[in-house]
Image (cartoon, rainbow, N blue to C red; front, side, top):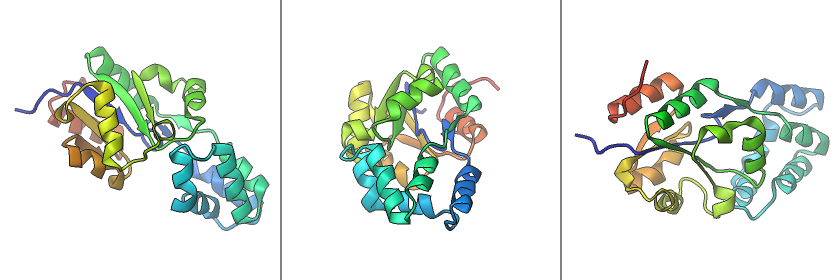
Amino acid sequence: MNPMIRAVVFDLDGVLRHFDSTRAEEIEARHGLESGSIQAMAFLPALLEPVVTGRTRRADWVRTVGERVGDLQAATEWGRIPPTPDAGMLALSDELRVAGIRTAILTNGTDTIPAELHESGIDAHVDAVFNSAEIGIAKPDPRLFRHVLDALALAAEEVFFTDDSASKLTGAEVLGIRTHHFSGVGGLRAALRAAGVRLGS
């Protein structure tokens, strides 16, 4: 019999909220940039790692991306694309909390995450937020997951983690945290039931 799951931890982007890729493509086309070029530059490890570990502010990261692609205005517009909260996922988080299971966010985020979550209302649907930019360690480093376990005061087998990036799951798996490669709310519900979590339809 599986140990009881007492907390479910969600990745943020691609799980609890989503960005419309067509918005970025429209910005790039309007500025004469190759499709996908801004995000490709932004997610280069040399630029991304400092901002998600809190050594660089988000505004400085976006400015550097603009300088590298040769269009600061395009990067600024890209950085202002608003994400859309996933209503189905937020409803699932609420359902878990009603059932007595804590929920949390674990994101490779930036210094603006607290404001973003408050403005979107996402923070009202979870019990805790763990932001790599505040902690100084990014996924998939097992030390970040150890930080989460310690903060929740739970054992690894009592925690379930889901992320839309399979590579980000490895640090959790090293510690024995049950994981799920997220591709949609239906699949996650099935994985949670398989882990012994009682849910509705």
